Length: 425
Image (cartoon, rainbow, N blue to C red; front, side, top):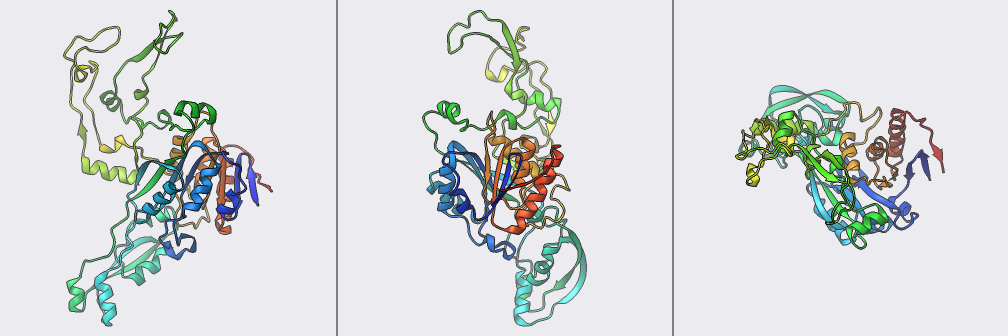
C-alpha cells in the first residue's frame, strides 16, 4: 500500500519486500539514513545495520551509474560500508557531517562505583539544564551528569525542551574518589555519509547519455564566497572566451567570440566535509581569521585578458586583495530552520532539511530522476526532494513514522503552492 501526491510516493511496509516489486534500473539515486545498529533509545528498528541483501536489492533497481548516499554511525559504519561494497556497489568517498550540538551518552564511573557499593553521595550543589524529555531518564539513572547543555543534539534536533535539575554530588567511597571525572564515551560531533555508485556501463560519457547518471552536480553545490575579498583571494578573475563552431581540437570556424564566467567564480569546489552552523562557528573560533596576504603580479598585466605572465604563482590579477575569514568558508554550512522538524514529530534521528536538500542537489542530474529512501523515517529526504523538484519514493515499516512523514510532506507541498491531496493505492 502506498499514498501518492504529485511525484511523491510513500510506501508502508518492509523495504526489502517493497523493493522487490520495483523494476530493474528504475531508480536514479538513493539517499537514506538507515539504522545504525546502536539500539538507540531502546528502539527496536535500530538493533542492527541493514545487511548485504538490502543493498543488493537497491543495486538491482538502480540505473547504472546511480549514486548512493547512506548515513552511518561512527561505531558501526564499517559494517554498513562492507555490506554496501559486498553487494556490488563501488565506494566512491565517505563524507563527514560535523555538528556542534551532539550530547555525550557516557556513564559516570565514579557514580556507578558508589551506587554498586550502596554508598550515598552528598549533594553539594544543583545545576539546571535544558534537555529533551527523552533524556530525563538517561540523565537521572545513568549517572551521566554531562548532559546538561543546550538541547538534545543531532539525534533530537528541535525536540521539546524541558528544564531539569541536575544534582552535583561528591564521591563517597575511595574507589569513587579514584575514578572521579572518568566516563565511558566521547561527545559525538560527526557522522559519516557513505558515497557509493553502481558500476557504469561503458564510459562515463556513454553512461551519462544513456541513463542520465554517473556524475555529481559540482557547480550546483559549490560553496559560496563570504565576501568579495574572499572571492578575489580564491579565484582567477576575468572571463573565459571561446568561439562558436567546431571543437575537439579543430579550428573553430571563425565563429563569434563568447564570454562566460569561470566556473570557480561561482564558488569553491564542494568538499567531503559538511559543517552545521555551530560547528562552523567553533571551527572559526579555533582557526581565527585566516589572512591570505597580498600578492602582486611580477609581470605586466595584459589588458586583453587581465592576466599577468610568468609562473603560476605570478598569474594573479592586479586586483587581488587581502582576505581574512574563518576556516569554515571552505565548507558547506547549511542554514537550518528551528521550526522545520514539524509539530508532533517524535522521531529521534531527524536530519536537517537544509542538509538533505544539499545532498539531493549533489546527486541530481540535468534531468532529475527518481530518488529512493528505503528507510524514510519522518520524511526529511522526501521533503528535500519536494523542495528541489525531484521525484521521490520513500519506504517505511513503522506506521507511526509514516503518518509523520505524510504530514511533513503535505506541508512541503503546501509550501510549494500545490494542493496537498494524497491518493491511495
